[in-house]
Length: 126
Image 1 (tube, rainbow, N blue to C red):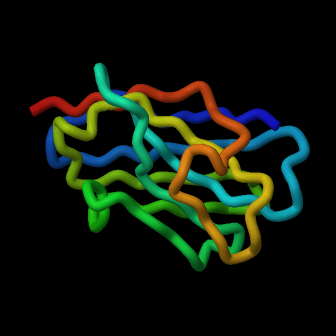
Image 2: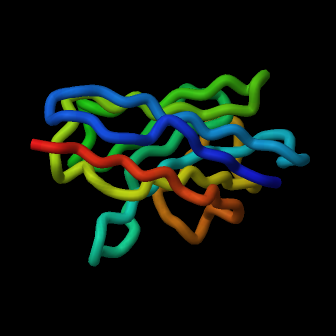
């Protein structure tokens, strides 16, 4: 399984970006997807997660109400819509896939995710 992120770049504070994560290969029949980020000098942290069904979503406190995670299973793609961006959102964003998930389950912890993308840089200027 390979994950490829796209959509990162430079945005002004208050602006928006949409990240995409396309999965290729042969993931399991049902899998959860998540987004994490790592800012310079900091540990990687959870951002958002979504179940296979799309019904269950989780967000970190710092992004809740501003970011929206979604997925298109037919396209094997997950998305992260980021609105009202802040300079503190600047980080490398990683998508991840949990192959052992259930139809309506999603994980917020890194150890549940077996596959990771290469990351995409998001920079928010003030």
